[in-house]
Image 1 (tube, helix red, strand yellow):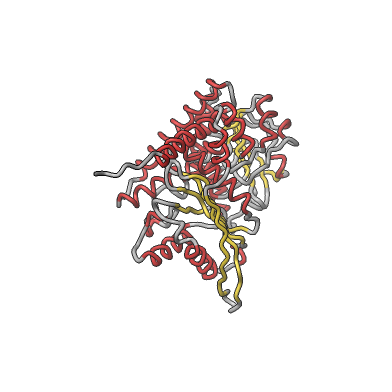
Image 2: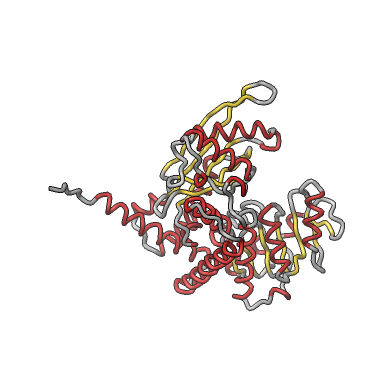
Length: 415
């Protein structure tokens, strides 16, 4: 994140004091709490909440439950949320949170106790106008519902807008579950159009078949794109004639949420999926899967970063020199934060929007963001990634400067 930030900051001639402020989070909170497990023993947990920036509005960002959660990761993800909101014009700042735990080994009641204890510890940090959490790795609508309920109990009234990604019955929004994948598909179609490639004659490989990868695959399949390869943590599959995605989704749902053993394709190595000769490669699993080591072997024309940070900074130059169009994560996977913003708005306005309204607004925002990024890329003769950072940094830096001038202005007493 810092590598790309610095390139954009140099192009903008960003003032050193503002540069340093935007590189560091406004707040980073570490909380320790204990809960009683189902077997009666007490266990301690460590959690984090990092608020990177609030110049554009309340901070916004997911909460991860994972054994690999650490403060540096949370800080980077919080900063990405700031740039993601800024590049799409969403009036949010960036935040991220996490708890070091393995949700797969915890019962539902234990997860609820953990969520409520974490919320109570951060009840003065969270708030609809302050910091708005959302689901991330290892969390979902259940955890967001518990968070909202606990926060509401602390404050003595129901406050739906404190969190997004809730169940519909708890004030969630239509379209939120599939929002990131839908956004990825919208951006993919725009990128194909940019290279004058027709969806019906295009091929794609998708690494990752969780929520984002699954919905990306489905929406692109419906638009006529031939999905020739998919993978999840268990297995990777290839079918040059195209994979029937609705059939694969049915298999996945009936097979304990895994594609392992899917019969209508050939199993390949996970790393080979990234090197297939396809029009579009969509890494939708984890960070740093395309690095200096394998970047030169990438044969895709387009990479759409559905995951956060799937291309390392040392691979950027190689891909650019090989004419691979990379659409950066802070634009490509911004569908999630966009529909989260719609959920927050609906809660704040006591409204409920129809699905076609949500999808149309999402498409409009992402199309505008895409066009702006490519216009700035041409203007500065930079990659779309650096263009996205230029747009985001400029917007946040200018707003931050205006706010600081206002704070420093002398206050005059009225007679």
